[in-house]
Image (cartoon, rainbow, N blue to C red; front, top):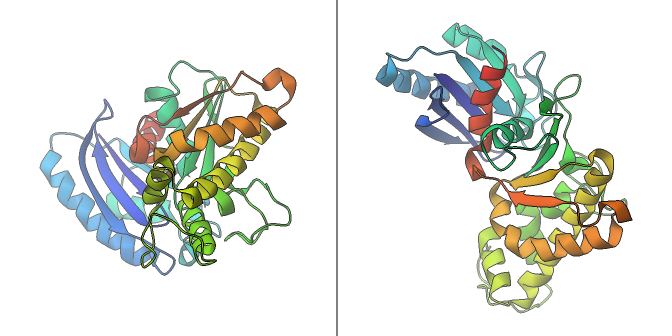
Length: 309
């Protein structure tokens, strides 16, 4: 059995996963810009210990941790833009002290890519790229059937490709990152900015919509929502063209909460790819939604432990 932990900008999830990658138990705890890692890990540790008591017949092979902006060698966070108080915190040291079992940490999007390649929408491919789009934007890279992590595990920061050199400032400090235009919070922000300029929408004017509501309104023909979705899809297309030219993947898999709106985004992605991709890339790209949706990183954390055997 594997213990998997997935750390994100809005929540930290834990799960017990069997050798066939079925989730046996799961829990979640809220995170955020002001969250403190030691407090949260102490809380989650108690939950995991309680869950483990229910499966005493299954030995724990190891812990897999999926996290953003973490050095896989040291297990320490390095300036995570959406979890600023976590900088320097060592996940591996904490887990190995508490549980006395091997622990492995990898980039959240890279581990999601591993899960999709092994068990999900990337099965059968040799070269695959994965985008996760939710609170932030990340990526994972599969080359010749193997996960490519880079020297210290930071490969695949696709959310920080520059798509507009004179654009909005990103949480990472750079200007015009892809994340600034296609993450869930960015889509909502763009909608509110346009609505505040007296633009009409079928969505209520006295509340803040979710990305799901914006996609639903776009599908229903709401002009303002369609415009916002079009901008996001266009910028995602710019990012996809960049990675197509760099890696020439067989398939691109898109996961995370925003992937629920992929059907609305695809016309704008396709238009941008047709316009900007080199001629020999056009018509060759296969884009699919992730199979595991929100569980890609959890399943991937378990796959990552298996990979270390």
